[in-house]
Amino acid sequence: MKKLLSLCILIISILFTTQSCTNAQQKNQDSAQFMEENISFAAEQYGLMLNKVEDSASIVNPKSFIEGKMKYIRPQEWTSGFFPGNLWYIYELTGDEKWKTMATKYTEALDTIQYYTGNHDVGFMIYCSYGNGLRLAGTEAYKEVIVNAAKSLSTRYIPEAGIIQSWNANKSKDWECPVIIDNMMNLELLFEATKLSGDSSFYHIAVTHADNTIRNHYRPDYSTWHVIDYSKSDGSVRHRNTHQGYSDDSAWARGQSWGIYGFILCYRETKDQKYLDQAEKALNFIASHPNYPEDGVPYWDFDAPDIPNTYRDASAGAILASALYELSTYSDKMDYKAWADTIVASLASPVYRAPLGENGNFLLMHSVGSLPHNSEVDVPLNYADYYFLEALKRKRDLE
Image 1 (cartoon, rainbow, N blue to C red):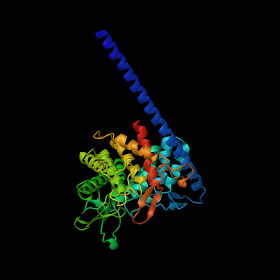
Image 2 (image 1 turned 135 degrees about the horizontal axis):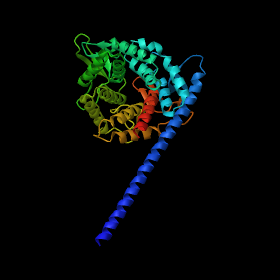
Image 3 (image 1 turned 180 degrees about the vertical axis):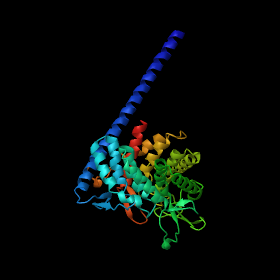
Image 4 (image 1 turned 90 degrees about the vertical axis):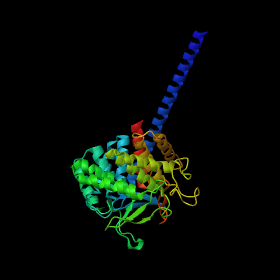
């Protein structure tokens, strides 16, 4: 009887192990097919976009597609680094050299931005373009561009407040030294510049800005204000406002994602636990929020009064997904990868991903630039595509 029982247990164990292996193989196969289809689609869609862009008499930089017309931007516009960044990511995902050629062309069209001091967005402009170019092509000259851009960004550092000023003073809003949560993303440029140059002043500026963002930008529930206005004379906080969110006291969705992503990259570069803790607490705010949808793609503002009858922001979802994939390599407090997979699966579905040949040949639909200003509402945006492609790249690396 004991021998029979042992035999039954052995058979059940074998069957269970076989089924588990089969399920794992099927899951891996499904994931591989998902990746292959999305990469193929991205290459086809952006191939169609490039055909139109390359027909122009000059080098143009697409940002969005609004009311049937492509919106092109000049190099000084804050999103100018994302289109070349998208080309770099498609090159990385496909391995096709033609994308490297095009990415190089549109990256180097931003050459003058290394000296731009008009706002904090030089980090987005240069690191998403030249930063990816340096990583993937190893072009030696790109190092100098990145260091020069970090010098330009550093001119906006205000020692009295310990922050990088985002925008210039605005009398109509009574802003003396406005800093937006988005600025956390530009710290990556400074960290890279220290590694390339050996100049630790860039590192010091980055960590001081991050520390003061923790101190002043976050509420007790770990939601973030969009804009903090500082005094240039003594560094005190003058105002706490929004610019693109629903209200001064609301949680603007893309701002939440910018902050989380920014603190995760700060942890990567410093290994300082407080940055990881900040990111996780800000994520807990999202995960436990009653207005956070099951598909993982946030409404444009967590406190918008007309939820659920209002806009989603695919860009906020894509940024969040990319950040979650990286966080999953540092922490197991939650299944951050599964959360990211949910968001990416939603973004890749017909609800958010455009049909081939439509949407101005951008990948994602349904992003919101600034609803209060009725600017770029429910349209594609080049940075939504950028962080979606980055999320796909990180997902593939993990799997």
